[in-house]
Image (cartoon, rainbow, N blue to C red; front, side, top):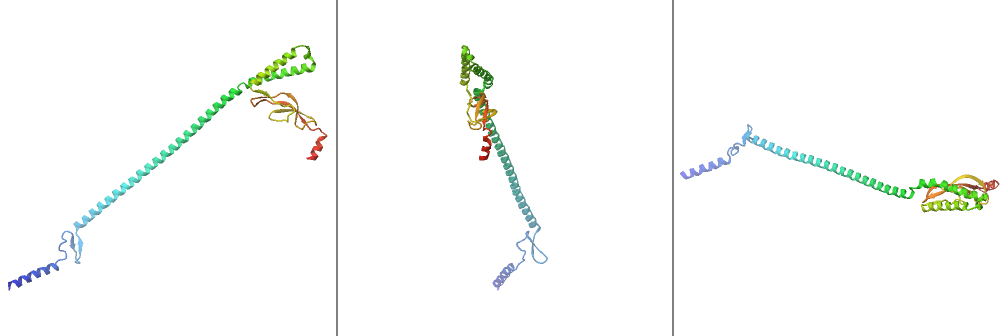
Length: 240
């Protein structure tokens, strides 16, 4: 009889465990409410709040590092942009200085060349009236017949030829004007006369010879230019 009773007690103990207190095993983590449900214990809530605060702190720290990293990157990008701008300005200044230096060098070379070619231009201009006077003296002697009275005319002609030769060696050449079409760049019209034997605006007389120095005008030729005779003008107007 004793054995069956022991078996019954063991069964009752097992049954008691299966249908025991719902809060058994949650001591310290949960408490039973008045409705018979489980609620977190104060210790668990404190632990949860601490864990949440720690998580928020880590998130804030990471966000702070991200913000600091973005700020540092933006600052570096701004400094890089400023450095690139300063470099571009420096390159531009260098190019401008190089261009100015090259232009100055070319001007210096051109000025030296012009000085070598035309540095005596004023001296030549001062000599031209002397050449004019010698030519006038020779023309007057020939027209008056004084040239047949001795070697004076020959001497003057020799001096004139020598002066013209010296001027030619230095690049001075007379301007061809007689019988040429009037060119305002080389000729200065002093008068017009009617002349039907040549085309209009033809140089028919040279008052004063003009000269050039290596292609540069020293003095224009002073000339008389032809125009159609008066009786030919109406016919010319009618034909036009």
